[in-house]
Figure 1 (cartoon, rainbow, N blue to C red):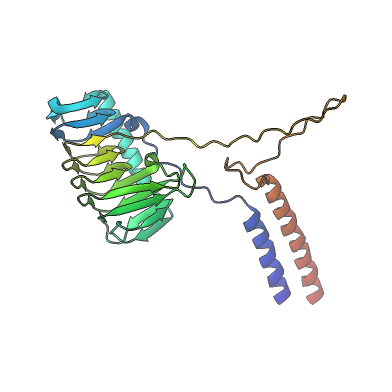
Figure 2 (figure 1 turned 45 degrees about the horizontal axis):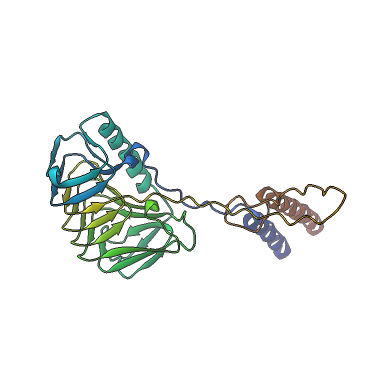
Length: 295
C-alpha cells in the first residue's frame, strides 16, 4: 500500500508541476474613468496653483471651485454624461480591486517596506505611510500592486512611494474603504479609488488618479499627472546568418515559447500537459497492476 501511495503522489506531482503556471494579477481596469485625473461625487475644491493632466469630473455634484488657479491639461465635466459614465466605471473598478485574491496581510505602516507584485491588505484596516515604500517589479514592467484598506490611507509629510525593478505607477491601485489624505509634500504613485473623499494637502503630488465615489476631492497646490503604461514586449531573436550555399536553406520553424513574452524556457505548455497526462496514465496502470497483485 505504501508503494501505491508513492506512485499516486508521483502522478499528482507530474500533473501539477508541468501544468501552466498560475496567472499573474491583471491590472485593475478603469474603463472610462481612466481618462480622468480627478473624479468626485460631491464637490471638487482647489486652493493655489495646481496642475492636472487629464480630465476633471464631478457627478452627481455640481460645485467645482478654485479652478481659476488650476492649469488643466484636459476637460472639465460637471454633472454631465461623461462624468456619470466615469462614476459607473469607477464603481466597477472599485469592486474589482476589492475582490482581488490571494491577499497578503501586512502591517498598517508601509514606510520602510519593500514589496513585490501582489494584493495587500492592512492588518488594522488602514494604511499609514511615513518615509518611503518601495514597490519592486522584479524586472517585470507588468507587475501589478493592489492595496486594500477597509478604512483610510494617510501619508505623512514628505513621504513617498518609490518604484524599482521596472514597476510602473499605472499598475498600482489603492482601494480605500473610506477616505485618503496625502500629507504635505508627499509623493504617491498609483490610482486612488476611494469610497468617500480624497484630500491632497499643500504641495502633495500624485503620479496617478484621485477618484472618489461619493465624496469630495480637495486640492491645494498639487501636481496630478497619471503616467502612461509601457507595455512589455518580447525582444525578437535575430535569425542565424545563412551559410553560403547554392542550395536554398530550408525554413526552420520558430521554437515554441511559453507564451509569457519574457524569454521563458521555450517549452510549449500543451506539450507539458501531454507529458503530464502520459505520466499520470502510466501511474494509473501501475497502480491497477499492483492492486491486482496485492489482491
